[in-house]
Image (tube, rainbow, N blue to C red):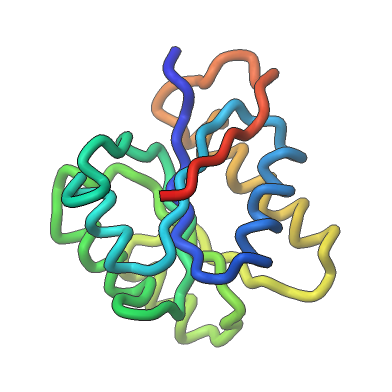
Length: 155
């Protein structure tokens, strides 16, 4: 089976590093593609410009507050385009406001993870969610035996 693809929409290098650590902990065979804001996420999904050869992601890990387009705008874009509705999008944000969570879930986010200060708990939560959507019960197809690691490509 082809390697699973995670699109990380994250503008902060430290948070992207945490994502990479969590994926390594989850031991999911995965290609990680990173874009830095919501506008780049849309271009990646549309395979336009420098993203012409971009793979279709199996999951999107989406920050809320970013330059150009925020996470809500990306969720709205996914919902408006039928070809992208099946891609699970999980919010990964510093915002813990219940209104932000409710709004994200109403726009189609599958989960809403808050970046908090307990690194071990954060890694566990992120690893569980990524594992679940990329090889678990939410994935359309199994990704094999899960014996791979994470490879990363910055877009």
